[in-house]
Image (cartoon, rainbow, N blue to C red):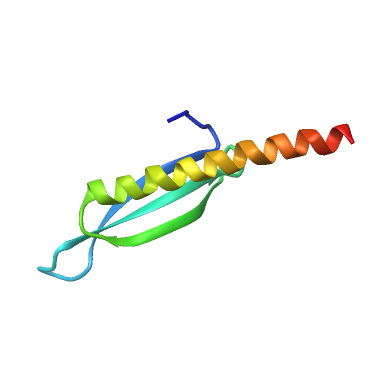
Length: 80
């Protein structure tokens, strides 16, 4: 997958209750400014880290594809 400075994914582990199984959640983050990071999309309830990472990679690919498509459309609008 192509590296992006603007979009990244991260996986977070959380414990739902004392003695309960661990739960994983994944987030797609976007760099709004040099100091500010915004969560663009999140999904929770994964039973394993690998499952959460798989979802995050798939969604990140969608975000990067949309970002590239928007850049192309923007360039085409400027030409008109």
